[in-house]
Length: 148
Image (tube, rainbow, N blue to C red; front, side, top):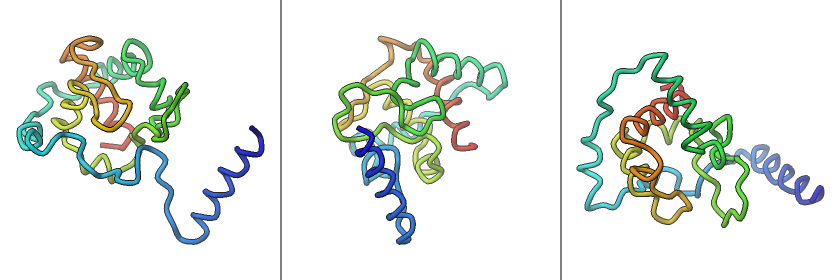
């Protein structure tokens, strides 16, 4: 296990030194929309109906680290390196990726919480785990990882 860890670090260092970039969260097509083409325009029109406040951000943080168990896959720091038993090849989304943050609308992210993310291990959370207002609170917290 220790050798594999060193190999992983070595690969990252080589990629960086050679001028490459390392995408920690998700697949190589990090900017590819996860909402199906026939639903994406509608999803992009959905807007967060709640104003951002410190209290709301705290509620989102509590849900992310608790009831929503987002932290399990996305990690405490939102980089997609959580404790994932049985991961099948793709890392969860890195919420600190500013390009990804800019490319996804709030409506698209809400759609994913409601329907899951096709082609990944991301399941749907609304309404089974989260109420709609809680989902918006979590998304507000997710946006904070990218400074938005």
